[in-house]
Image 1 (cartoon, rainbow, N blue to C red):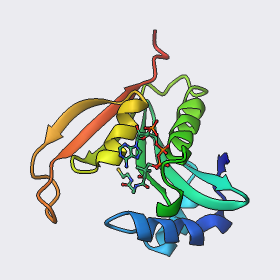
Image 2: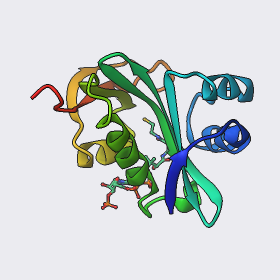
Image 3: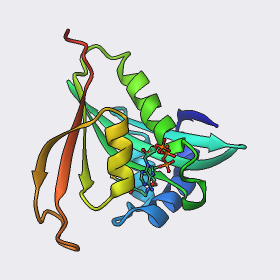
Length: 149
Ligand SMILES: CC(C)(COP(=O)(O)OP(=O)(O)OC[C@H]1O[C@@H](n2cnc3c(N)ncnc32)[C@H](O)[C@@H]1OP(=O)(O)O)[C@@H](O)C(=O)NCCC(=O)NCCS
């Protein structure tokens, strides 16, 4: 498996994975637009020439926001999610101004929370009842990048 930056031509498969994996899918047009945004970094995990997962993030000065990560259901638990996060962290390490990567996750999303904890993210703030559809808490998590040391 390899991880590479996404191209505009990957929009359809990213959209399909998004639709199948995440509660509020983005439209194909939005994904196409955001793939061209210079401040965004999209990564895809590719297995046997097939995209099996993606990650989207946004660079906001000293902070990078990890917006979404998803892996096709049939391809989970084989390291693709971890490889996507590792590739983002490696990329951020090349940007000295970036101090932290932040994200939001539903408390009930045990797979994602476990992935983030394993990757070194720590809980910053928990907001009970944040998601109106389920009443779940939102966890805001952060990974310090340590450039300032
Ligand atoms: C979260 C997600 C991206 C993980 O992708 P993945 O490719 O299956 O993850 P990996 O195989 O790289 O797993 C890495 C680590 O994450 C944790 N993890 C992943 N899936 C898990 C699960 N179902 N239960 C518990 N821990 C899990 C484990 O710590 C795992 O390490 P291990 O295999 O050594 O135990 C995937 O489950 C997914 O697409 N979920 C739906 C979309 C989603 O919820 N995205 C997050 C939005 S905030």
